[in-house]
Image 1 (tube, rainbow, N blue to C red):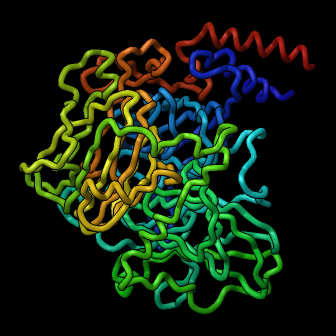
Image 2 (image 1 turned 90 degrees about the vertical axis):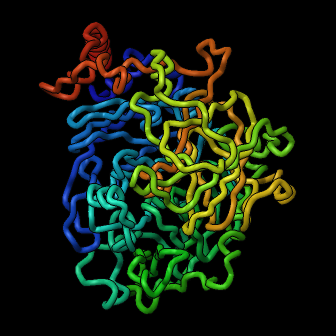
Image 3 (image 1 turned 180 degrees about the horizontal axis):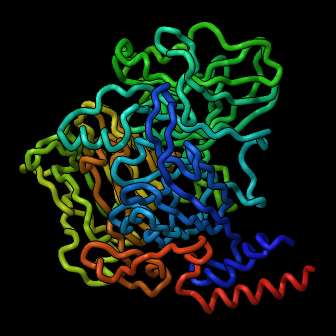
Amino acid sequence: MPLFSLFHLIFPIIFLPSLCSAADPYVFYDFRLSYITASPLGVPQQVIAVNEQFPGPPINATTNYNVVVNVWNDLDENLLLTWSGIQMRRNSWQDGVLGTNCPIPPKWNWTYQFQVKDQIGSFYYFPSLNFQRASGGFGPIVINNREIIPIPFPEPDGEISIMIGDWYTRNHKALRADLDAGKELGIPDGVLINGKGPYQYNTTLVPAGIQYETIQVHPGKTYRVRVHNVGISTSLNFRIQSHYMLLAETEGHYTVMQNFTDFDIHVGQSYSFLVTMDQNASTDYYIVASARFVNESLWQKVTGVAILHYSNSKGPATGPLPDPPNDFYDKERSMNQARSVRQNVSASGARPNPQGSFHYGQINVTRTYLLKSEPLVTINKTARATFNGISFVPPKTPIRLADQHKVKGAYKLDFPDRPLNRTPKADISIINATYKGFIEVIFQNNDSIIHSIHMDGYSFFVVGMGYGDWSEDKRGSYNKWDAITRCTTQVYPGAWTAVLISLDNVGSWNLRAENLDRWYLGQETYLRIINPEENGKTEMAAPSNVLYCGALQSLQKEQHHKSNNAKSIFKGHSKLFIALLMALLNLVSIFS
């Protein structure tokens, strides 16, 4: 057995016994985030790579696996990685946002350790600080079913991950400087597909020489295509020329299966489609991601185009792109499509029981929150985004760390459950949520753009959406049987979306606009969910490698990286390191 394999066999047993159950397997990743130069739209620019890759490499795990990601920050500013949609049970310490983690300073490394407990599906990771996602640093996460849990469709012949998103040739520092100055970001310079620019389908709109993505497939085969919108703020319509896309899963939950010719994917959302390669291979086919709900004549260039290449294809794709939805006079089309996404209540998810066995429609709501968003407002002479008139200011000391060390004034438990008729303000105001509560949250969007809303640590039931102002009588339209469960939902302009959430995951969890500009400008808060009878079983303790900042900065010890990675990993654990070496030597003698 190779020494490397022996190390990975012993490491979780010796070094990580307090983290997760030793009976569950481990997967290990080293991620080094750094700047590289790339030209996705034909213009050289600085992007954020993971292990010199843009987008970053995938994380692949299986239900209940323990995931260990050692992150090295080779950027010139603070860094945190967050894991969109991963429900870290009892462990908000690993969530990777400012309310839960102190940032990783430049030239430091920090190891995330979490279990993907009772989850399956399609997710992604990205940097959560300083608008960095606008420059990259993202990559896909796949969590597979355990072998004993069948998937509710025939096993696909292959898997394809596609990351789509709007893109600017200005890097994240320039973009956030614009926001700080009160400027709008303007029309994006394009849409990337897997970090690459558009195929030259039109010589006027697309210059020559741009590298584009090509997806290789075989005729007659069926592929699971996982699509993630990792962009900044643009909703995108995704379609594959002449191919039906059979919707199968979204953000960890299997859906009622139905065919689509095109599908709206909003910022932060992830979907799985089954696509059968059943077309004539006389030519290649277009894969398109184009901007939605915009002035198409001004936004024509904001279109991503990749190529679907059959192994027996006879020639390149030609002609016009497949048409986008023609719904300028039908604002209900996209909403009706969203309403049609329903849960497959008979399929097993991560456990061998139907996804619909949790009868959410029969549970009494313990509290209702109405979160209203409006156009940007001016607070302290700067443009800010708000929920209920509050623009969130990230705490200098993370919430649960402040609780543990009894830091006073780190945050306020006074977030209003209704919009208040008062002057907007910036504040560190969070929601004091009740453990084991079952809450209703209505997102009312009075802004002029679509909002994507995301909640860390949870999936919620998307029970209703409609145009106009929400009122209590709208509850009569809620889907109380097979509403889709997910972690990111869209809220159309001038409309509302209602979700139900079972508060069974202790910790502090971020609730935010996934539109990067609105998030950066303060449209977020946190739910602080504490078990008053905590006995060590509903919330993990702070990890041994916890970082300190804010009021606790004096507790942080300096990191030194004088030699190789292994030495830095075992720094302060010399006895464990010696024990590991002894165990390795014993096993080497056994297998030699």
